[in-house]
Structures are given as C-alpha cells and as structure tokens.
Image: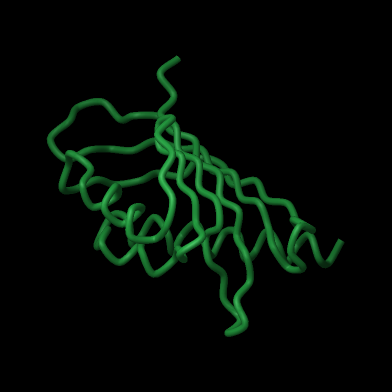
Length: 128
C-alpha cells in the first residue's frame, strides 16, 4: 500500500509540473522526453524528442490553461519504478469562450538521476 501511495504522490507532482510548463513555456517540455519517446496526439503518431518538440511548439495557439479534474496512476512493472498516469480535465484556450475537455496518458520511466522521463504520451480531446 505504501508503494501505491508513493506512485500517487509522484504522479500528482509530475502532472502539476507538466501542465505548469505546458501553460507557461511549452518549448521546455522537450526536457521531459527522450529520443525513444512516443506521442500520439489526436491519432497522429510522433516519435522522438525532436519531433515531439516540433509538434508541441507548433500547436495553433499561443496561450492556454489546463484545469485538471482527475489523476489516476498505477505502478508499471515493465521497468522497475515506472508508472502509468491518466489525466482528465479541460483546456481553456486564450480568447475562446468554451473550454475543451481532454484525456492524456503518460508512461513515466525513472532515470538514473532520480527523476522520470515520458516514454509514452497519448493525448485526445473529448468531444462527447
């Protein structure tokens, strides 16, 4: 049980960090990925930190704010210490009246330095 509590604490800290960077300095998100990272963004498959950086910095809006509704996390035993994090919330784009609902899943892999990188990232807007 203690291990699961640790996973939830790390997942919450990661989510807070990720969306704070996304909302304030999106170009810095590339530091959270590595050359083997994968991103599926609205069905488009993107591989590698450079391509992920280009996708995220090339999105057709300058400013946004994420509001997180739920964070679910589980340990992932594919790599010792890894975890899966699933996030739901809404995204408010600057100048838009209505927020957009979204879901995002991350697979986090521990680094030798004691932090994590994003191995897998799946993002979808929820239109229903």
